[in-house]
Amino acid sequence: MSAVDTVTLTSPRARRRRLLRKRFLRRPMAVAGLVVVLAFVVTAIFAPLLAPYSAGATDFNALLAHPSAKHLLGTDSLGRDVLSRIIWGARASMQAGFFSTVLAILVAVPIGMIGGYYRGWVDTVVARVTDVLLAFPFLILAVGFAAIFGASLLNATLALGIGAVPGLIRIARGETLALREEDYIPAAIANGAGDATIIFKHILPNMTSTLIVQATVTIPTAIVGEAVLSFLGLGVQPPTPSWGTMLQDAQSYLSTAPRLAIFPGLAIVLAALAFNVLGDGLRDILDPRTTR
Amino acid sequence: MGGFLLRKTGAALVVLWLASMLVFVGVRAIPGDPAIALGAENRDPAVIAAVRHKYLLDRPLPVQYAHWVWLALHGDLGVDQRELSVAHTIVTRIPITLELAILSMLVATLVGLPAGVIAAVRRGKPEDYAATTGALIGLSVPHFWLGLLFIIWFAVDLHWLPASGYVTLHHPLANLEHMVMPAIVLGAGFAAVLMRQMRSSMLTSLGTDYVRTARAKGLSEWRVVGHHAVRNSLITITTLIGLQLGALISGAVITETIFGIAGFGRLTIDAIDQRDYTLIQGVVLVAATGYVVVNLLVDVVYSLLNPRIRVS
Image 1 (cartoon, rainbow over the protein chains, first blue to last red):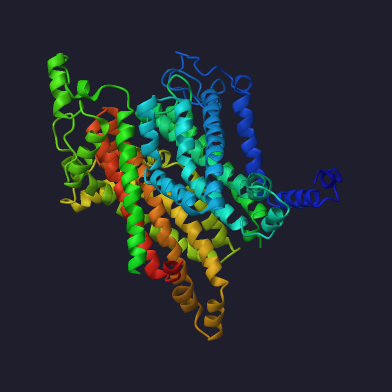
Image 2: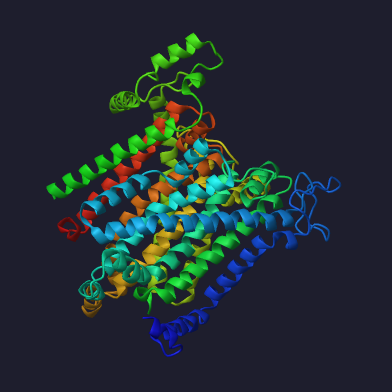
């Protein structure tokens, strides 16, 4: 296998990669989505350098100030710069989005694969546990989680990750069930491959594209989820900035300063939209079933 | 059919049983002593011991669980911190959330299904792009933000609709006035999901042999789409509605919080805020039961619509 890898450009893998890149670049929406996603990631990482003010800096001479050269998006009721808080808030959103998705994949994929690979009673147990988890609306699960372990970004991220687990188990299980029937599996068995080799070397690599697409659509759900939980007071705790807590604060000023509710919301929509557009584009180029 | 029903019902009962245990254990994992919470201000050890005895909190967990399930099966979910019947509170709140759910489903269906059909029939045309873009935005805009925007526009700026509150169905007009915004807010995301699903299953249906046959027979395009393609696409939509119920309950929690509607969703948040153990237990159990029952119904309807399922 490794001998094939080193023969670059002409190897089928390199050719496939080139083909995918070409197909991706032909989709302006997907490219735009990727650019915006990267912009948000960079914003989150370099928030201290990019934000004009620190997240907690108050300017008591400019309470609820309108947008101006000094405060591009105005200030909130404590005179804090809205733009800076949105930039800092990107951290909570990106953290919740990425880590909860990674967590969900790490938990769900092995479980789903084991169920789909071994079938029989193992599969039945996996299917029932998934059904039980699905029977709890995500928000009730998250709210209960916050009640038991306390409200924080970490706990919100864990709850969002757990909330995404049952859906991902179903997907991993379905994919494994289908991939198991491929001809290369009996071939591998004939070559003396054990269960672990088949699962990790033959099935897992073949479902990566599905998993990548699922990850890109799980992240925006988690970003919105973090905002919802923080909005309800169950996620990021003030004074740490988060788009959700900013919207919660804005609720008291809907008639006097509606812009406080508009800007953080736009940030959420833009981030979620970018990930969704990117996910749609990736699905189109990676999933052979929808390739036209 | 009988065997299929029996198997599905059996599986649903197992799920419910596991869910009830999870609720029971989960509630007991919440920090704080329920006996102290139930004893309210009274910190007298004798009172707390009496409370503990009254609510069986001094008995082993399996006994408590069995007792709770036994009473729940008889429609008794215990009393909350204010000594009110939990079952009664839930029963009074459910119709409000049910109304919200039905209205938002109505909004979603009226917008999502036609949009999906049009997008599929006019694939690649401006109508398709408009519908697809609309759905993408609908998926990315969080309900609670849309709710805030609606309040700013329609209640604060235009004074068209009340910003919050709920009026009973005895005053249908006032009731509708209060429910319009929440129903649209909750329905928007679901409309987007429906539209996308409808579009993709319509595209599949339109490519099948029976649609080609129908066209070859010289049926009008209207009849081909309406009678053959749409009907078959509706099968997938049925399952989707069941799967979306969980999202709908989550959405109702947020929507009811924003618009100040005292429904089932709001009750959930309040129960947890007040650390009212019996109430939390009852609310979550009822929500999970609702989800399991609806999905069982969906499975049954699905098998009626698509006989192939019953065999596998």
